[in-house]
Image 1 (cartoon, helix red, strand yellow):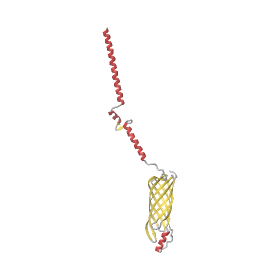
Image 2 (spheres, rainbow, N blue to C red):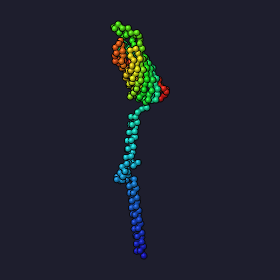
Image 3 (cartoon, rainbow, N blue to C red):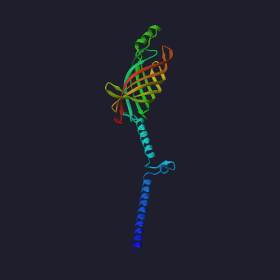
Image 4 (cartoon, rainbow, N blue to C red):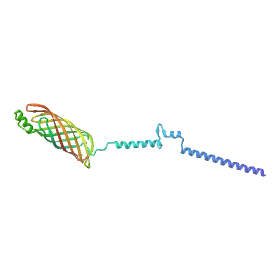
Amino acid sequence: MRTPLALLVIGSCWVSLAYADGDRMIDKKLAKVDTDKKAPSADSADNDKMTDGEPVPGTTAMCIDQEIADRLAIKRKRRGAVDRLFVKQGRHEISAGGGYYASDLLSGTYIAGGSYTYHMTDETAVEFAGWWTHANADIIRALEDKRGTVVAETYAREIFAESLLVWSPVYGKLRLGGAIVHFDLHTDIGVGVIDSNTSRGAAGVLGFGIKLFMGQAVAFRIDARNRTFRQELLDERFLVNDSAITASLSLFLPFHN
């Protein structure tokens, strides 16, 4: 009786130990599976990161690529063009001013006039200008004495009517005193007509200048222009290159950009 009871006790103990070992093996396998899920192998990580040659969202490669893209976008934004403080496109410019006129055949004198400019873009415009000056009496009297010829009108007026194409390739700003002033540089090319006692005909016009913008409706401009035409004086004809430097005040319409 004791022998079968002892065998039964030993068998139940062995079964309990076997179940315990089995439970421990199952726990180890489950723990291994969880570890594999949390830390995938290098091959699986590479496969996850690349799908058809493109990074999968959420991976380290995607984060690096996005960071580089953000930096490049910031650099492009810094290098981008800054909006103009003074916009000329589609606006009308009315100018009036005067300056100094230097003639090849006559002495220097003053010149006065004005212009109308329509700005097709911020860089290109068409301009129509009219200027008035006169022949200098001192040089004419000297010619009269030298040749023994009397010129009837010693203060003969000269009128210039011009049509020009204006190109403004440079726009910038500079410091004048304590203020920042925006400016542009422009070049002019065109043709003109001259009405005077010594010349009636066409002229070629070439020039350059600068505009200093004050506010959104007013600008101060300085222009230097050369006019090439034929001039007749005391029965002789000459091809002259007369120059003028003028300062003008410009008003832009409409008054705001």
